[in-house]
Length: 437
Image 1: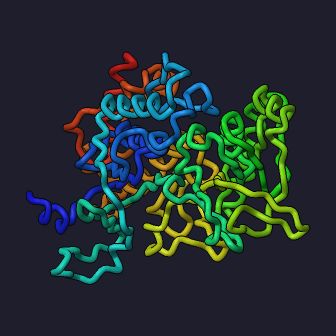
Image 2: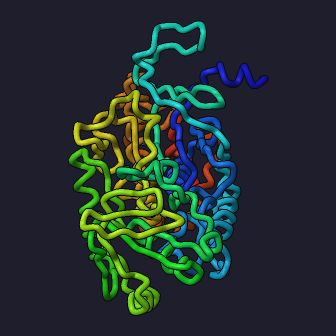
C-alpha cells in the first residue's frame, strides 16, 4: 500500500489511543491485558518523534534526581536510574524499553487532526472513502482515518503552553520564551531575567538562572503557598479531589500541583534565605525595555521567561462538542459525560504519573463493558453464547487472591488466537494457568 492509499483508506478498529506518554502507555498496557492486540484491535498514535512522552522535551538541567515523583508504569519498574542523568534520557529509555517489552507498536510520528462522530457522516463519501457508521468515531490522522468504537485521549498538555497577554507585550525588545522552550540556565548567563509564574517549573528555573544571570526578578499573580511536612496519601487524595471537582462541573482543570503548594525543601529554603525567591506582584504592562507597575515602579530586562503552565491539548476533539459552558469537558472518572465512547486520561485529576496509571486502567475497564454491550446488541446475544462459544453465565473466573499472585507482565501475555474483541476467556485461562489453578 502506497502513502496515498494509506491516507485515504478507512481502517476499522475497536479502540484508538491518542498519545504515548504515561497515561497512553498505561492504557495500552491494560488493553493488552484484556487480550486486545495492537494494530488489530487497538492502535496507539503518538505525534512525538520518539518514545518518552513530554519528558523527551525537558531541559537538560532537569536531571532525574530533580524530578518530583515519577511513578513507574504498570508491569515494569524503573530501577537503577542514574540520578545525575537528564530526565529526558532516563525516562525516554524507560518508555522505549516498556513499549518493546509489551509489544505496544506505537505509530509515530502521527498527527491527529480531528475526531468526529461517524454516525453524522454521509452515507457515502467517494472522495474520502468514509461511510457513515452509527456508534463509531472517525479519527482523522496524518496516516489515514480510523473508524473506532472507543477512544482514549491521552494527549496531555505539553503541546499547549499557556502565554498570558499583557499590554505592550509586542513592544518588548528583548527575548520572550516559555517553559516549553527553556534551554537550561547557561543561555541566560550575564542577562537580566524576569521569571513569571509561581509553580514548580518557575521556581526551578529561577533557582538555576540566579546562579549565572546578572539579575533575576520573580513575579506571580498570587502569593506562593509553601507546604511543610510530609505529603502523604491523605493529602494527595484531598488535592486530587479539588481538581476532580472542577472537571465534574465542566470547568477547565487545574493541575494537581496548583492545589498542593510548593514543597519547602532545603533548596527552596536556601533560595528564600538568599533572596532568590523574593516574590513581586504581577506587573501591569510590558514596556520595550522591561515591565512596569501602575505605582510607577519599573524593572528593565533582557529576557521574560513565562513559566505559566499549560492547557489540555484537546482541540482535535472539538467536532464532538464535548465542552461545557464553563469551558472544560465534564468527566465522570475518565469518561466524557457527553459521549461514553470517549475517555480522557492524564486530564485533570489524572494529570500525574500515578494518576495516569490508575486512569488508564479505569478507562479500559469501562471500554470493555461498552464493547461487550455493543457485541451483545449487534449479535442478539443477551443471555446466549458469546462469539468465542463460551456461555456468558458460568464462565470460569480466576479468584482474586490467585490473580494478585500473577506478575503484571504475565497477565499481559494473552494468546493471539483468542476469539472476540475482548478475549476475556483467553485472559482468564492464561492467568489461571500461571496462577497454578
